[in-house]
Amino acid sequence: MKKQFKRVFVIVIDSVGIGAMPDAAEFGDEGASTVEHISLSMPEGLKLPVLGSLGIGQLTNIVGTPAVKVHPNSYVARMHEASFGKDTMTGHWEIMGLLTTEPFQTFTDTGFPKELLEELEKRTGYKVIGNIAASGTEIMAKLGEESMRDNSIIVYTSADSVLQVCANENVIGLENLYKVCETARDICMKPEWRVGRVIARPFVGDTPANFKRTPNRHDWALSPSGTTALDILKDNGYMVSAIGKIKDIYNGVGIVESQKIVSNEDGMDKVIEIAKNRDFEGLVFTNLVEFDSEYGHRRNPIGYGQALEAFDLRLGQLIEELNEDDLVIVTADHGNDPTFKGTDHTREMVPLVAYSSSYKNGRKLADRFSFADLGATVLENFGLEKAENMIGLVIEPLLED
Image (cartoon, rainbow, N blue to C red; front, side):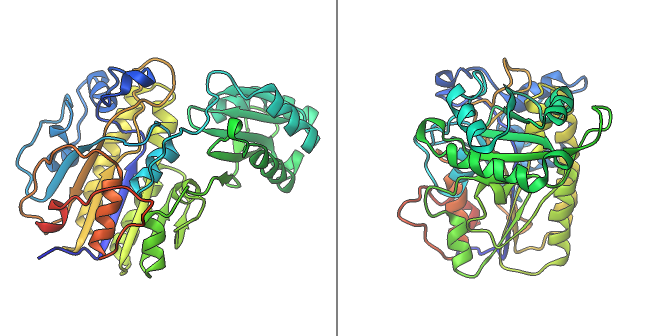
């Protein structure tokens, strides 16, 4: 008889890859291995007692975390990405059933084309400065005063498919900044400039010493290219609770409720609060972005390792609040090896760590060949079928234990 879980918690630990994909060389990523290389960089290794006890050490070499082979309450596997890409939206969309064959446009190395920026200036009336791949806080400190003085806008990008617009909200006005971003979204619908997200990045302050981002960030994302597991869950009356940037990644489609977060810790606070206090049937879908944004792109393996150790502690606290008919799945959306060349994401396999106190036969499973197997399994758990446009095969042991 198949098991059915009442509440499913999926936590995407953003960019936590576990080894190069077989086709990594096509992306310039041969040899990348996020978790392994972090563990080699940590002075005393990477200490992940909770994830280690669940079997993650069987998926990749982790100095400091033994490869525990007996873990009856958890299943682990490596998942390969079927889509052609290594960005946030491609990875997340595939988790919930969508295959992406044409990667979103990125402008990490070149900046945005002159023609794109000229059209943005013409249609908005604002001069564009910046146009590089950069950390948001760094470019704000570097160009913020110039932007305020000239009432110009700072445009920048990252390793993701994203166009970000930064300006002081007390100078430009928040509504004007949003209008600029709406115009940029329209311009970036052209196939040659098609980015996944346009993001408003407002800040306040008088000098670089006191510049501070405000909570008025807003994203204009592309909607998913087809029906996802989230749509099917929502349409059938199940909860789909999005924590972190999940709502932005799916442009709100298939989401019942959402909460923004300011950090990984805040995200886990919100997940634990739901687990502890709320009764529902459905999915809590969480993204913890700081692994990627604060440590991966900034090539900080020690900070990344410390963030993983902090998450491991919080995962243990979450497990303490779970019921026997709850399932928690920890996974990722791509890699971002902080010891690797450049500042881009890395084309890697990702972990699948599935825990329930009701499991009795947990073990390491064979590799899965699409992230979408996760979404297909969630749908099967609730007795639902995937749409014709969706990919993914049910991970049978997770529902047959």
